[in-house]
Length: 138
Length: 73
Image 1: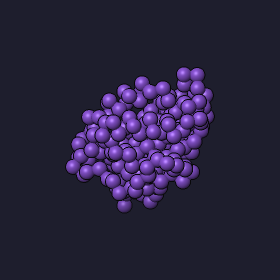
Image 2: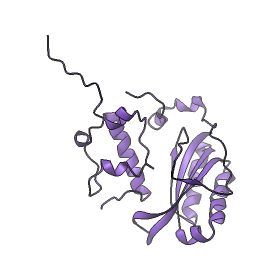
Image 3: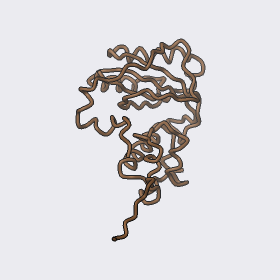
């Protein structure tokens, strides 16, 4: 298990009317593959920098979760097949950052930030680039 | 004595601020590292060190994918 951060761009037509359903839909997909959701944040509606499939605006949702690396491929595929999600991005993360202007989603399970990925997994060479958020500055 | 110049403060803005990795979600500061067209500034122009320039490159590309930044403006 290690920590990931997923940013989802949601269809406004669904997100504005049935927000709870959309959030639950995403949580269900994650939990189906044994992911453990740590934090869910709504960024709110934003104008997109360019049109995606005819959409000019979209709602962003940021989710931090723990998952097995082998499950990520299937999770990504399921998100691509979903109707609610226009685009999604999943990246490795080692810490949850506080974003001041964002509002936590009501109803979504919000847990504390003391889940840190195991240090044994940090030593893999391919993860070296992304896991250097620790304070070894110049 | 040979002339030796020492910069006390780093030229790289991220080193000065003590940032480890640049975040792709930081949509307020990332546009400062691109031209008005949306192209990345060169390392010479931005003054970033190698490590942070790599990091900036990755985060701008991620931000573009999520439509936070334009590919072409």
